[in-house]
Each structure stands twice: as structure tokens, then as C-alpha cells.
Amino acid sequence: MDDLSHIRTLLAVEETGAITEAANRLGLTQPALTRRVQMLESALGATLVLRGRNGASLTEAGQLVADEGRLMVERYDRMKLQVSRRASATAGTIRLGGGATAVSFVLPGAIATFQQNFPNVHFQVKEASSSDVAEDVAGGRLELGLVTLPVRKAGLDIQPLLLDHIVLIAASDHPLSGQKRIPLEALDGENFVGFEGGSAIRQIVDENLRQAGLEVNVVMELRSIAAILRMVSTTKSLAFVSRLGVAGQSLVREIPVTGLDITRQLAIVQRENHTLQPAAENFRIRLQNEYQPASNR
Image (cartoon, rainbow, N blue to C red; front, side, top):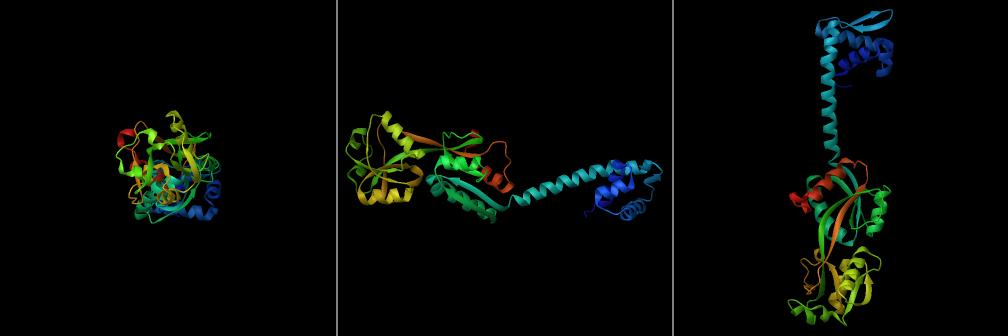
């Protein structure tokens, strides 16, 4: 029961025109509903309900109370909903997924910052290919996904998030690391560690290299960025990885390549025409605010 229960009782009588039907609607016995009406009449010092053979009707004073009370109930219910939504936006579990770059370098900081403000929100994070993440979001198994565009899955709402630069890396003691910039020809004959075949980032790298007229010798395929960085530093092979994964690394160095600029668009996806639960919507908005300039939103 809320503080407006007696007003709600009067509104039920007005809408049904009968004490018995109003009691049934509210889940009350007829005597209990009558007592509520009498308590309201006593508090206001006026008769509010007239009972007759054809049911119950409101007096002029009763109609005034109903009209004003309806506004009070609507405002109260609206306030209660807003409070509930705010509370639910600060607790719960968010299910999201992303590729290796997103899970390793985009989500950790975003989640840590979010949980500082909302410690009661928990995350279930799945690392998978962009196509698998898109499939899981469309199927409702994940609420949010960070994927590489384009995604070829229907039923998704897609919001671009950030432009990711794919850069060439080499071990710090590799002969090419000492150069400020190298020509494409310098990559001929070099061994490369690549992302696993079929991954979105691998397809983007391969397509850009083909367009540049360059064929590289991929001697190893790995999924983890951490594993690629470690392998590059120990085997003296080269690799193309996200610049997000190179920041703060001492084992490898980024080497600019003349005439080669590889980028990919990362995006947030959710189910089309589906309302996120409040905590997930809160996180989505904060993630977009962090990575997108205000002019791009």
C-alpha cells in the first residue's frame, strides 16, 4: 500500500461505478474498500460517494477529489518509475562481448571506471569474433557487443564507436625498429605473425596489403594480442596489430610505413527495436561519451 491508496480506491469506484467491482479490481473485500472510502471522507470532511440501486457514483466533492487525486497518482507513479529506473541502472549484470582488441584494450578501462561509480553492476564478458558476437547479440544471448564493421547480421542496431588504427610492429631490437619510417618494399621477405584466418582484423589487413600490392609471409596465426606481441618480441617476426595494443609496450615498437594507412571502424551493437535493461543502457551511453567527440554524437 502507498500513501495514495485511499485516492486510488476512490478512483476505482469512479471508474467501475460499483463498490463490489472496485473492490475486486483492487484485491480488497467490499467492507475493506468501504472503510477506505469512509476514512477519506472523514479526513476531508465531506461525503464523496453516493450508493444506490444502480451502483455507486461520486458526489460533486467526490468528483473534485477524483480529478485532483488522479493528477497526484499520475505524478507519484511517474516519480516512482523514475526512481526505480535510476536504482536499477546502478545494479544488475551486463552481458557483453567483443573481439580481442575490445576485450583487452577498450572494455577494461571502461568497465573499471563504470564500476567505480556503480559498484553493484557486474559484467559477464565474452571474447569472440565479431561475427560470433553479432550473432549472440541478435539472438539475445548478449546485450551489447563491440564489433568490427561491417557486420552482416540482420536485426542489429549499429552505432559507430571509434576508428582503430592498425599499425606495423617489430621487436625493439629488430633492424627495422631503428628507422623512423620504412617503404613498403622493406617488408618483402619478412616473416609475419598474423591474427587467425577469418577474423575481422585479419581480413582488413590482408585486403589493405593486397591493395598496396604487397604479399607477406605469415608464419604463425594467433588469436590473442598479448600472444602476438610476445611472439613478435621473441621471434623477430613482424605483425600488424591495433595501435590500442601497442601503447605502453616496451617489448615492441610501432613502425610507420610509407603509403600504408590501415584503419577499421569499431561499433557498438544491440538488438534492433529492443530496449536495454537500465544498467546496460547506462554503460552504453558512458562508453559512447568516452570515445565519441560531442560533434559526432
